[in-house]
Length: 614
Image (cartoon, rainbow, N blue to C red; front, top):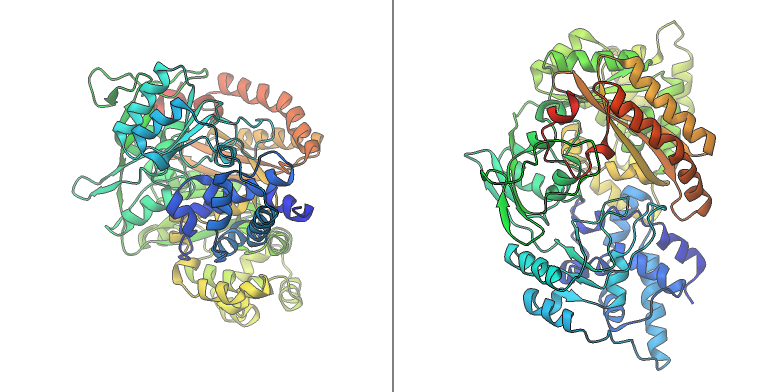
């Protein structure tokens, strides 16, 4: 039997696919890198352990291979603990032990049934890249959104190139097999599931940097982290989504937005051209005169234009004097007005208003420290919001002339590496003895206070590592010795901290385009979403707000937090949906400049003007 505490931990996997990218320099799960199916990565083994404990899936030939191929190297422990605080190695051990003992009892693994369709699919993509083994199928059947029930596919196929994708699509069409396309499976609405055939694009990893034309040619299996790594080597960056999210999939689905969208745009701004296979398996490019017009927008559910098999993504040059900066605020409206003013004046590249919850969760290596930090920032220091900026030295000088109290790159590193001491008595005594009508951060951020702060915080990799589990402290010490781990520019480009937002619970994010000149309206949207969540007992908080188009528009994120394994939370979010869906739909059609991202889903290639200026 698999112990219940192990099963519960396995069931809490967030499906962020961070174990499929080498974002900490630890290397990848060897079994996953070799076999490439989700089931062979730690995420898949978490699902399988939970399913076995609940007798949902039999022990098959594929499951035996999955369990035995895990070498218990511990990479998943370091990776998963960094973002979620979970320790998957215990789950991996339990899975191996369970399967081994079952075999020792003389049991025989289940062999998947023969299937003529599968034989043909294997002829197209190669024998190892198509399967109907239930142990592999199961890991493509669900995600953390509790209102999207599991759907077990009949096949999973990993094509290696465009021609194989086209052949699979044509075969599926000819034989009446439904199919769904999967990037890294990060959808939280059940959109990547089918009871037919799942096309997993993970093997299509081609990246070609065209430095002369400032574009990258990207295949559909390439993740944001991988493309950013390739771009940086040539002195460029890309406007990307979450690090494990596939670039092509996110362009098509949501249009690629981030704090860099202030300078680099969204939707059609992010690419030069895209290549698709339509539903008949025929190739077209958006630059073709006869191509469908995907640059338009329809305010109704719309299917994607096809399967993206390559995108020409815009590259943006970097300068060698870019640094990050945080500008604290107590009042939301003041922070919104300031970030809009920066955008209007073309000051800065990445811009955004961050809430205290976002900032503390990003910075702190553990959930408990994040809670303490949020209280310190908001209550003790009066820093309830912060405007985040990445800019060259001219942009930073301009900001300092507008708001002298700032957290620059040096001070951010000091605060990050001294986090465990932020809530200690010496810190609290210093703040409480300052007095005055100004927020405490105004006093603490004066230049003359920096030596005092350094003495109190004692910043060092060892200090920060003291907050994590004892057996991981050496690893975290080495990790935070690397300069990029305290560099706001690097962290914001590669976005490896974003997944921490789901550290204590699964995050359900509302993303709404808003008019930036109406902070009271933006605040009212947040207030209404808060009221709906509070009425159902759902945890919730403001996330971020990023300006677009010189501050004319912006994109707002507000977050609900749910335990996706708790039926009561599933019922809470279902009841909340009865209120937030009609509310967001109504303001999306009645208020200029407001659009809920759900209305734009699968229209990520559209020109932003088509939905923001109507």
